[in-house]
Length: 132
Image (cartoon, rainbow, N blue to C red; front, side):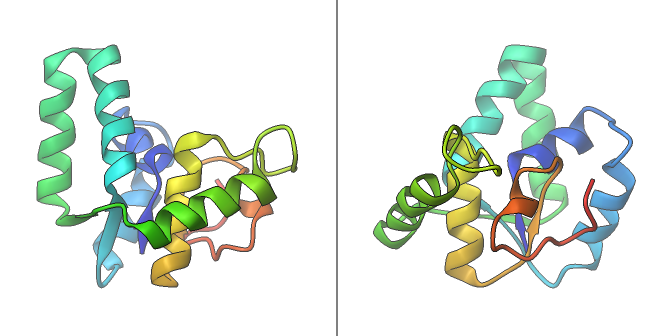
């Protein structure tokens, strides 16, 4: 299973979906996060919570055994295609920059995507949880 930044933020910010997301992560054989999503999450967590946010993020990723997958050329091309097809201002999904990397990793690994919101449900990806 691939995890989008939105799901990690929901967990770390104690949002209502956190229970379902934690259960999905615990039940998954393997969980992956794009290295681009790691940077995005780090920026958001530090901006909102300072250095403690970075520590909380690292603790969660390590405890949940989430594998960070380095961005490669194939994923970069898939991310480009994702924006062309589903990008903000051109499609109902409205994927932003960070979303495109989660999309690309899920496509590359042929894995479902764990996410919060209604953006990815308008793409061709398999959701890991019912719409949230």
